[in-house]
Image 1 (tube, rainbow, N blue to C red):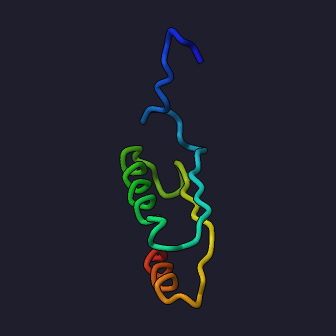
Image 2 (cartoon, rainbow, N blue to C red; image 1 turned 180 degrees about the vertical axis):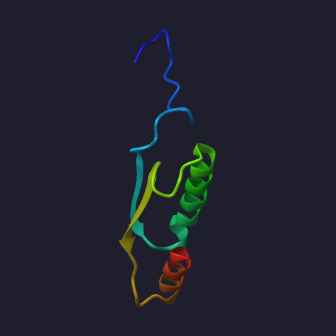
Length: 79
């Protein structure tokens, strides 16, 4: 960190080949995990990453099987 040069954050030209994005949540609609999937897909397109290279998106968690909405949402996320 330098006061003379503010932190700019990563740019799209940085090496993301070993990067990963991790989300540990319950699979519920209110968590908006579909937004993470869409944003990650857009990033991979911008990076022109092949299926076997580039960053990874890891969604880990569970859901309450007694709540139909959670079961349905999990099935939707799997597609």
